[in-house]
Image (cartoon, rainbow, N blue to C red; front, side, top):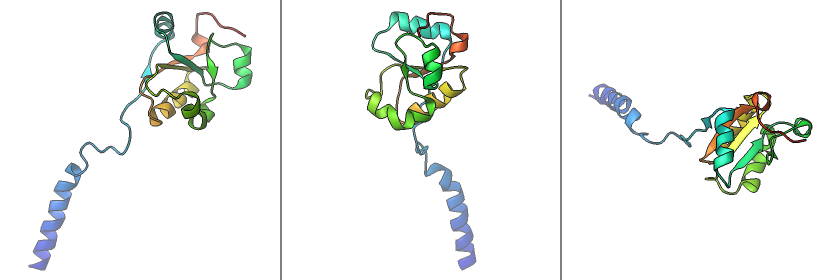
Length: 132
């Protein structure tokens, strides 16, 4: 009888376990949106109150960046974002040199609870104004 109860309990747990955590993914299921440079430029031209993050290094930033971009290297996002970007619902546009670091930075922002993050790749594909 004990063996049969043990088998029943194991079967019950096996069937019930997947349902025990419905809706609890363990974190934020939000994600960032990947957009093109042209889409980012259109947002810059039509929206207000957005922030542009350059996820490159200081040296790269000094060589040329998108007007109004603030420098937060991707490896510093986790440490600096909440202090420098207090509004987690604000539109945040993220770029780097080629798109790799901006994806990392965008993913980190989402993990930190930012809800309106758009990543638009690299400045190497940016066809619009830059400043030094």
